[in-house]
Amino acid sequence: MALRGLAGSGPGSRGPLDEAVAADKEREAPAVVVAGATPEDDEEDEGRSRGLLRWDGFSAWLHCVCVVGFDLELGQAVEVIYPQHSKLTDKEKTNICYLSFPDSNSGCLGDTQFCFRFRQSSGRRVSLHHLLDQFDKDLPVYLKKDPAYFYGYVYFRQVRDKTRKRGYFQKSLVLISKLPYIHFFHTVLKQIAPEYFEKNEPYLEAACNDVDRWPAPVPGKTLYLPIMGVVMKVRIPTCHDKPGTTQIVQFTQQGDAHISVILPTVHEVDLFRCFCPVFLHSQMLWELVLLGEPLVVMAPSPSESSETVLALVNCISPLKYFSDFRPYFTIHDSEFKEYTTRTQAPPSVILGVTNPFFAKTLQHWPHIIRIGDLKPAGEIPKQVKVKKLKNLKTLDSKPGVYTSYKPYLNRDEDIIKQLQKGVQQKRPSEAQSVILRRYFLELTQSFIIPLERYVASLMPLQKSISPWKSPPQLRQFLPEEFMKTLEKTGPQLTSRIKGDWIGLYRHFLKSPNFDGWFKTRRKEMTQKLEALHLEALCEEDLLLWTQKHTEVETVDLVLKLKNKLLQADREHLPVKPDTMEKLRTHIDAIILALPEDLQGILLKTSMT
Image (cartoon, rainbow, N blue to C red; front, side, top):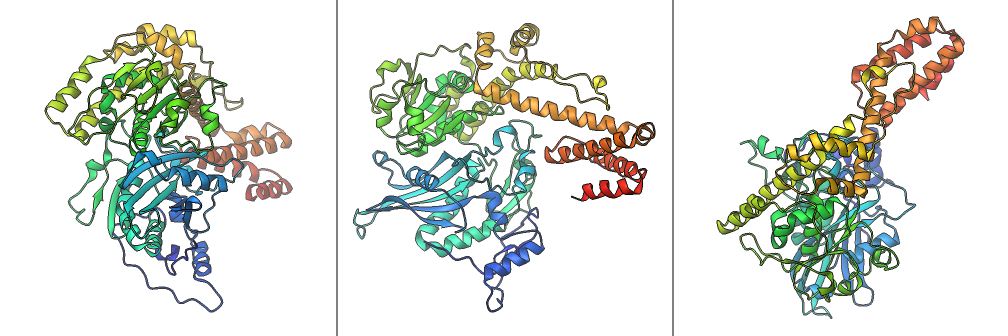
């Protein structure tokens, strides 16, 4: 179904992307369009003159919005893609279709919200908003976009309707985005989906035009985001925030009377609600996630499966989970065969499933969490036990953690007592989540600090950086050398938990999470060395150097310095702005000291 854009709702009707929107503004009247021109042409011309295009604001937050319905002949089908120029391959559309509806056995009547994640088709051009890269560098590592994946945020409605052949109205409104802001997008859907199901396409058009007026998702800024008469106040975390703190509360002011919704987090799920059935084993699950072990969550509905998978991925924060994870996975998924084959060991992935078929298909997986219905806040389900895998016959098997895994660390009884006491005292789920999140954070930090300390020692000394030589290399990571450091500066300095920490580290060093973490740290440290090398160059009297060298060597130096500038800009090197300015001044001074014919050539290369 094609949707037409609204006249007068392009970039010309909003300020620059980085301008905060304080309140929901009245829509402007449609602009008068010259005969022969379309409103879209008019808007795009105006947008280009201001450096903005129609839908730039929208694409900074969302790739597209899909409406998935049920067709008696075709089954699930994408009825609407908005904006209509959004690109999705047939494979991506098929994945969205199947992932946007609960499995028939889930019996989800009424409204259901959940999340899925799917692989972007290979070979297709990545059309990320050009500004997003610079925002990405300021995000915590666990919130950075993965260019290979999309998230789908679903609001599914199934209600009885006698006018339809099947007797039910079944439809999903789905937001497709690169951004892992689960709580934020679920809140957006709560605001717009119920009304969309009543008012249909014109309402969706208007909502998308509101999103197109939003400021860019800049980390660390307070953002006011109006949508259909509601204003949301959010703040996206930065890599400089202290882990475990919620900044938005600190700057909530009395002048926020027009704010309808204040979100304390954009990405976190209700951790305690998800871990509640298994909190006796939460430390063992933390180990399994940390080590990138294959893990299946079998749940009664996509809401429970997606929330639990996201809670598991979140439990090792601020460490990023580097393997694949699928909050909701179906037998129709394009990776179904890849992930369920018995011809090789199960891959490092966390799957959330609801179809009973998986109980048989994934029986060979080493770790399976079977959960029942998640209880509302204040209620506590019976605690599940750790059981042997051979006891898992069907999805109707009793809830439990089915594994033969022996944890490396002794169980921390204090956190269990604290959470049990909270349940007895009817402590709110939010407060329980804060306690559990802090516990996981301290556990992860105790584990990662010795690694950080050792990796920092691989950095060459600053005095070894010479402006006239290539930047020195990092020393090699030697596992045995690292293990020796643990005796004096291991996790025992910050954690009271006893156990085989050495064994846990040995296992971790072979995992995808270590590989991803170390590659990230190595890249950051290499960039730091490049930045220090640039600073060392700037401190030299380069003009004096050119007087002692030939013209060929001087031209070579200019070209190398220009490449350094380009590299610093392209790779976002951590260089002070005045260093870049100094280097440009050096380059200009050297060029001006050269003969005129060379000046012309070198100045021309700086313009191209």
